[in-house]
Amino acid sequence: MPDDARYPWMTKVSPTVPRGVAMCGGTQVSPDVVVTAAHCFRETSPDGRPSGIVLDIGTRDPAAAAGAGRQRTGTAYRYGGGVNRGDWAVIKLSEPYRPAALPRFPATGALDAAPTLRAIGWGMTAYAGPMPKLLRRVDLPLVPDADPRCGQAHDHPEQHICAGGREAQTCLGDSGGPLLAPPPGQRPDDAGPGDWTLVGITSWGYRCGTGGDPARFTQVSVYADEIRAAIAAIGGQPPATAP
Image (cartoon, rainbow, N blue to C red):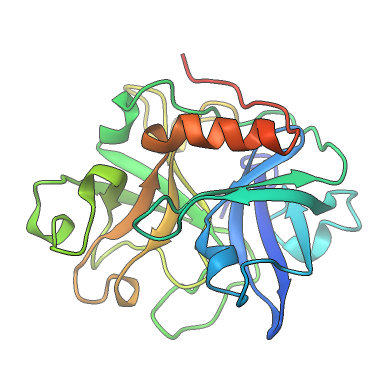
């Protein structure tokens, strides 16, 4: 089970929407910016504009964030076109939060092809199953773009990373959370909190992989310039880039 020190930048993103409060994951990439998925905005309210955003940062149990001084609100945001059109979003924090380390932004797409990638989140552990109280992790095998499961007619393999399948998968509630690559030659279990590179953003999949289909993750290296420009537009501090 992950502990607070291992992923001190992991964020639960809770937009207030007409039906209540939605839930997504997010990744803090600088002292005052969290990255998540555009569909956490576009698909949760009619106009894509939540009335508020609460961010619980750096705790396995998000309910403990406020008491630990790790809860913030979102004061500004920008997002991409949504699923298959740039499923990314950035949120500026109401005040900076400085964890011991932060993940890095990809300089290139070199780490997108890491053989094993790690996803973390508070999503269901099985299709139609319960939501866990504590943060979970799963290591996912990379599925090449050439695999037929990643190149369907409605898909855009050049914009996504495909990973996982029947045995290991993200699920409902994991949207917006990170897909992480460890340093080259290093196993995920050996990576420290500042060693990770944010290569993907959890976007979509079919029934949590029950049919053997991989999940799709927004390929951060493809949208890195757009995301950086959006961070600048909301007045956020830029993320550090992987060497």
